[in-house]
Length: 82
Length: 205
Image 1 (spheres, chains in turn green, red):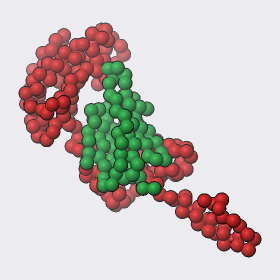
Image 2 (image 1 turned 30 degrees about the horizontal axis):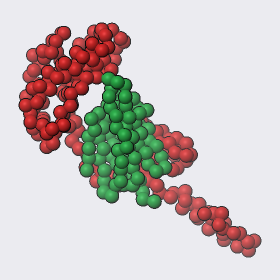
Image 3 (image 1 turned 180 degrees about the horizontal axis):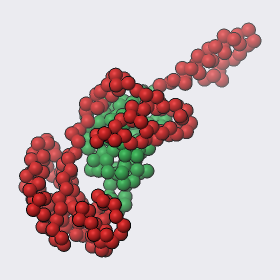
Image 4 (image 1 turned 60 degrees about the vertical axis):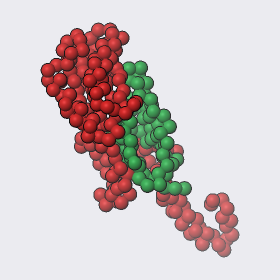
């Protein structure tokens, strides 16, 4: 399945994936930005949206061991079950 | 787990070999990995991958980093591996959103002639997508007062939303916002008149 967020960030996942969109705040007029997605297992395809352009440090994707910081881009990741 | 290995002199060599093997397995204890791909427009951006060992920067197409690994050891992934590990997630990607930019006659909420002709295209795009979600976002240039710009951009967004309202979107699927002078298309200093920044962006997703 896949979703497009209001800032045009696109997330799609493969089978057996556990992902939480922990926080999404996109209010450019107020200067408020936050996107925090957490993946525990499975695969994620991520295409960044407007937020990663306006305030890249507000966007994080975390795995159980690592934090991915985004500077406007497209990536895929896979997290293996413990 | 290595602390549990008790070494006696006669077993030292064997146990060290086992310890080395365990270390090797732990070293590639596969927590997964991340791969940088080109953006839909072909550009390649950058990502940083940080963990308790440090940070790795990826900046090349198909460059990858293992999770929970020591930094500075990115590797390249093949198309075949990419398809094998990520085919399903990539195939599930939603249709990319489509943006339309509408411009206005100075000082009001009347669309330019050219922008008026885009309305049919926008409505067609909405009809084409099941469960379409539409954002109408007003933007201003930086000339004048910030709060006045916010209001003007909002009025323009509302005017556009009014005729999109006829597209029979599901409740909650049409949002109207103003970004005022905070999301410039063409970066300028404050108090600069720039027609290309005076716009309403309609995003259909």
